[in-house]
Length: 236
Image: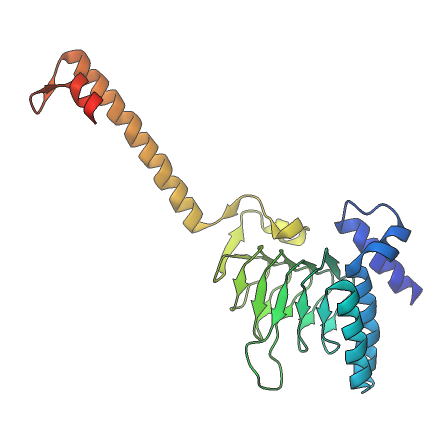
């Protein structure tokens, strides 16, 4: 038990550069507190002390601002940074080495019993304010950008951004195995963003060419629609 506790404390130092001492983590980090409460509530839930498990979960929410249903399954080295507003539903499953930021929701889209919440693979990072909804799978090493709304499965190693979320791959496949704070990834191969940037560059290039053409016409004294190029340039 103490080995697991030390492991959970060590995770905070790995993913939170502001953490200074173990005492600070134990006394001042709501994500750490919420996880401890959940471990207890989940054990009670499994032992069929349903009401007591819910009550422990309720106390945890009141103290930390983080709501984790006692039925949710959470793996090792799980970290919630800041934490306020995080909601994790009853049938959610979270693998090892996952990280959630504040405002994240792992929610259901059905009132039916059974599996209705997301499953996160190992090493998933979910940015602040993101919503992952329904019994979908977010693959190992995937990242969900801040404020994204994910309603479809995310392949392993991919990044989901936007509302509704779309999938973008990283240039460096090995990067999927490295931690990325807030699920921010450099050099995303985002087709939409790439197309917009190319259009902007093309427009700027066209403007430069037009200016060069007008300058040359002005030098030659060419008239456009009966006006000097200099006059045309001033009026347009």
